[in-house]
Image (cartoon, rainbow, N blue to C red; front, side, top):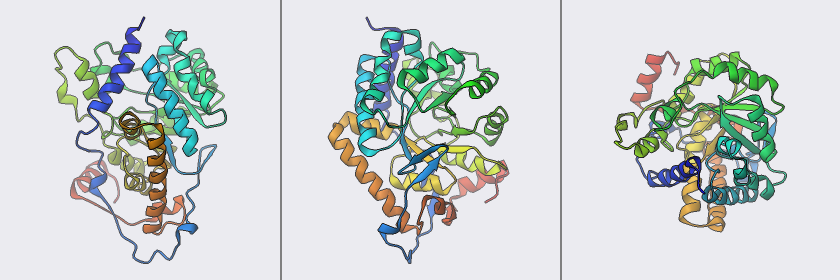
Length: 345
């Protein structure tokens, strides 16, 4: 028998694909990189390796949290973990809260570890859960790290959503007591510098800013409402680019993962130029898996990574760290945003 939570997981996947072709508004089109006519490099000179906290990655790219918790989404985690292994990138599973309430669903998440015994896997759960639940989520997939998602906007629109968003004290306890790194993650509404400062004050060392412009959970949850009366929140939150610019206001910074509408290698390059340590993709990967198959998605992703490397050559960046030195020009709306938020250009 399918539970309400499992049914919701299936709805999220279907609606994420339904809204995939919505206009992009993550802000990357308002960021221009300056072309380097004389890179004085060869493709063989380019080093895409990067250190993300304690993890050494071949590219500053990961497969973002998406799914799990039902038969259908378990099959997707099966495919996603095979993809992650094939391209040698980290992967996060979707929220495991459902499997903590219904242990029989744990296999829809643990399949990721079965497929990739030595890969980097991130567990995922809401920031309101107990230390015991967090350890259960980690053990479920033998996770290397835990994403703690904060999703006030999604819960507000969700018909059956929570209305208690007092999370900071619990985050502090989890970060202090867990034996793996904790990453605090938004779910598509972006983060301000003030939010990240609060998180750092309780010991958080890594954040996933997850800005507006990718999978829109306000739109998805509103579609699930009977009268669909909260459509006015469809553009709520900071874009991915605005969130990255916010990080410029911090004197010290955590590890920054940028997600939210990353589709092309150029999007990823721009995010890294703006200060991200790594980028993460969800909707784009899910779309390819649903519309094609695993083999075709592996080929697409391998080509995506090759193009990423070629773009590093095009902007004259020999390694990932050098991307922060690439000259950039902002369109006027971003200039206005930075001026009003006190961000230096």
